[in-house]
Image (cartoon, rainbow, N blue to C red; front, side, top):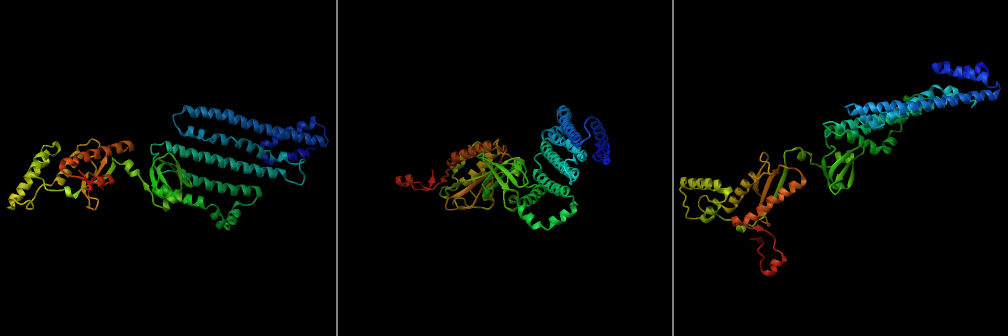
Length: 441
């Protein structure tokens, strides 16, 4: 083997790599025959050594260095290093070691293996692509770990960043693809970007969902529309449940029947939906329900009824106060109370509403710091609605439904004590028995 060939293989631009390659080839020149077979053998030996060194370096980095890093991360109190390990950030970085070794040793793989071809240039370009891909995969793992770290913070119920991070990763991979093409072709990346600009319409068509999802994710993040853990309703998409993930293109929801539904991210900003987060973050959950009273059962209270109502524990103060107020008003205006229509009088319906207010105010499951109303709605063919509008202390669904049922069980049970009837459309059995009254006694 000629010294010129050794110098050609050991490119001085490689610095330290050139020195050990020169020394190794010099030793092989003295050991192996000087014919063409010797040149091949020497270079094959050097290539084998380079591959072995690259594999050994990767093995040491992955199984020794990273093992130490994992143990150190497990012993620290912080969680961010654990997330980096779980997401494989360091494992992906380990691939940089063999890539750098092959990049520096690329000239060794040139002649005499392939003639009339700059094999070292080709290998350097391929290893450059290798390096770019490794860096991109490492950055992706780093961003995934950032999302996990964000979710472990106290404000994990804040704006979801997974969709935003997904858009950032998409941009990184597009830039990485451009750099890879530029590395393979040896062209300036700016020229490729200018060429891609002419294909904007095609790219927008191909990546329409990703682009719409990216824009939607940014708006969801900035406007704080949806968070992981929110209860949302989108009847048009059959969605009614908790949000479990917000990605670049979709919002994943687990419905109450335990099915999983996905909604395009841009649908969240382009269509209407209901978010129950306000209720979940408030001090109570609203109860808004009414019963219909038969208007034929509403009348002025007789003295006997007033006396009986006054014995109800929740109405003692109300009856005494109202009787004094009504008597004072009628006396002040000289009203002849011998006629029922004259002056002010108590009604059984008004007394019933007063009873409901007192009952709800003393109920342990009702939040008295929030709105508490017992109101009368517009009468209709279905009767006179009396609506209860209050808020429960416990927002748990099961407790809420049990409380609501308990209140109306009591309401329906006591309505007859005020000589009122609940309106109900007559059934076939009532018609058959001749009791088509349209109300319940």
